[in-house]
Length: 83
Image (cartoon, rainbow, N blue to C red; front, top):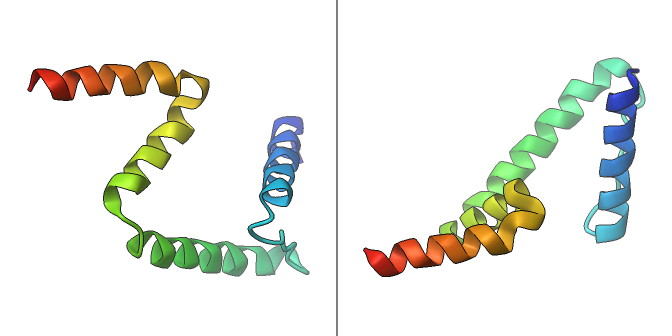
């Protein structure tokens, strides 16, 4: 496994563990991995369908902008005020 991929996987595992939202499951075999990922994506898709779209959008933008969220949020607020 490449070093960057390994670091990414460890970081994601730590984030999941800290959130307490789910237990990270490791597939028993390499072949079982795609099925596990498919179930995870299906679950996420079903969950997102039950959430308010505006809140999902805000959370998605927060993830993308990271520590720049305050800057972007202020700019977006000003854009809405000018419309």
